[in-house]
Image (cartoon, rainbow, N blue to C red):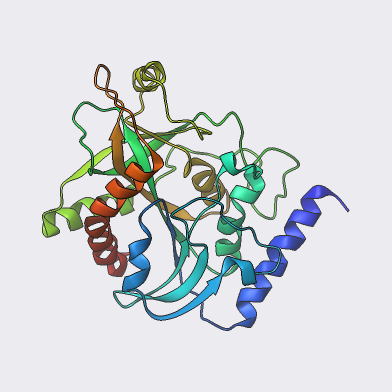
Length: 276
């Protein structure tokens, strides 16, 4: 049996595990990033399944990622929320990092909302800002679609001119205006981590066209688009790497900044859901 077939069997087995629970078929999936897990407290009628109970699943090793697959309702809308994601820097392959996205597709999800913590490089940004991701730059040096392609899952050569749904971005800005939430918009650069960037790297990334940089989201977006799902993503700016203003940063400070901005992100996402 080929590696690709083994991976496909794994996805089908996990998807069958969820389908057997008969928890419904929500059309929206939400992946929570560092420090943004408070959204789970707003979910009603929820069923919580720890990652450790899911057959052949993975376990996140990152502080701040609880590791739960949650079915429930957010503002009256059925959702699946993944509290805790997997990162390339943890030693997982790109295919493993994007395994949850594959499963979301298999259980009926059509739209994916991704969130993350990111370092801001745009001089107009400040810590605590929420940035809507308009586009991304893949600097992982890898791609989850490498290898033999299964044409039943997605195209060999994926078209990426609209990686992030313009329709969903428009809804986000209209909703933010109504709620009087200030939003930034920009390009997210995905890197491997786990090191935070040097001042020279920040400078290079900004010159290349990125407004923020982080260690996730890009592989998930690629896989979601490959599987035909719409993507909306937003970053909480947790630290700044502006030329001439770079400061030391720790993971604990990233979590603190994320937690501070979390209520606004929660409000925005909840108000958007009925419109999606």
